[in-house]
Length: 341
Image (tube, rainbow, N blue to C red; front, side, top):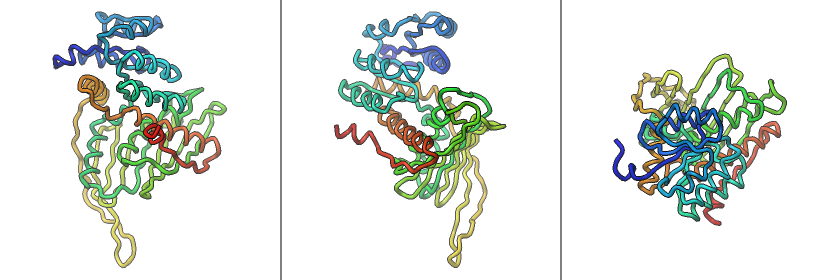
C-alpha cells in the first residue's frame, strides 16, 4: 500500500535496458513509477510493455524539468552515470544510481560532495546489501552469535556473461565487496588481487581478491565467468560459530563449529548445523522501497554515496594490484577526505 506522502512524491527511471527494465518493472508494480527515460527504440518498446500508461521520454530534461518528480533512478551504462547523476542533483532531485556509481574515482568523489552541498540524497544500487539473508547474517554478527569475525569468503562463479571490455573483477566483485564491508563494519587496510586472462587480451576472466582488515580479519572474493557450474556462496567464519549462505538454493545455515585449544593444540569443536529462516521478500523490492522511503522521509539510505565510493575505491585498488601481478596495495578511505574537505 502506497501512503499519501509517497503518492505525492513522483519517481522516474532513467534507462529501460538490461537492469533498468527490472527496476522500472518493480517500481511500477509497487506503484511508484511516474516516468521513464530511454532514447532507444528498444528501451521505449520495453517501457511501453512494462507500463503502457506511464510516459516514456527520449531525453532526461523532460524529467529534470518536472517539479513533481523528486527522485530519479539511473540504470544506464556506467560511463554515463556521472553526468546524469550530476544533472539530476543540480536539478533538485534525489538520486539512486546503479553500481558502479561512476567509473572514475574523482567523479565519484565529486558526486558525493555535490549531493552534500545541494542537500540531496545519493543512493547506490548495491542490491545484495538489501538481501534478507545478508541482513540476517548482519544481525547475527551484531548479536554476537558468530563471535569475532575471522574471515569471510565469497564465491561468484558462472559460465557465461562474458565481457570483452569490462573484466570479471568489475562485473562480478562489486556485489561481494559491498557485502563484506557491510558485515565487517570496517574498511580494509590492504588489498591484493590476482587473476587470469584466457579469452580476450587484457580482460581478466578470473580474479581472486583478498581484503585485509585492521582487526586481522580477512575477506576473500573469488569471481569467474569461466567456470563449469554456477555458484554464489558466502561463508562467514567466526570465533564461536560459522554461517553459510547459498544464493542458488536460497539456504542460510548456521554451523555450530569452532576451534578450541586443548593442551596448547587447536582442536575442532563440531556441532549440529541449523537452517536459519529469513524473509522471502525480493531484494529489488526492498531496495526500491528503501529508496522511496529515504526520499519521502529524508533519511540516509543504507547504501549512500559514501558506501558506493568505498566500494569503488577498493575496486580501483584491486585493479592496481591485478595489473601488477598481485602487489600489496594500501587502501585509502576516500570518504574521510570528503568529510574533511
